[in-house]
Length: 206
Image 1 (cartoon, helix red, strand yellow):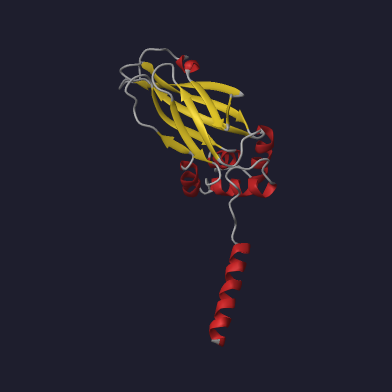
Image 2 (cartoon, rainbow, N blue to C red):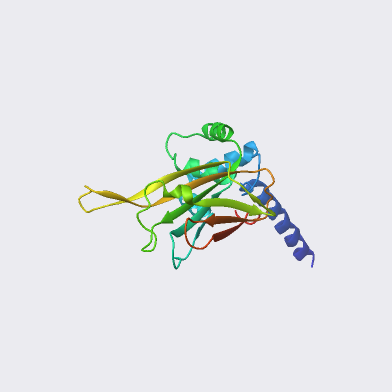
């Protein structure tokens, strides 16, 4: 019995020491980020395999609709995830100090990317069709975007001589004010077809 108790307390002590010495990820949704959280996010981004796995939690794919444009995927980025993504995009010659400076320059906001493609029932709308795509954030109440931009997507023929628009990425920013660490709903209203929703649990993303 005495040996069992000693072993039990030794295991408890080892677990406590391990938790103190093991680097912990910052909260997925937190603002403003602490210096430690920015540093954690930076080093996570520098490990490309872990970063890709981490960021995949922030993307949801959706089914093809019966009509209208195809909202292929909805991606949400918290301030922490934005630091991870920026670090992943700069694997060479990018320091933790630069990551901290870039975070301060960007400020705190939630970013949403919506990928929309044409379908047989919705074609030929031109490069700026994305302006007709409405994206909102819903948590207790509907929140309007603070910034919206679009990036047309193109396909080319085999020779690369001709290109045509097949869709767009719509980038939308929202204020973090009033957004709690809870489930949040991204609502996408396309120019035609049904409204699309994607729910992200900010409290469980890690």
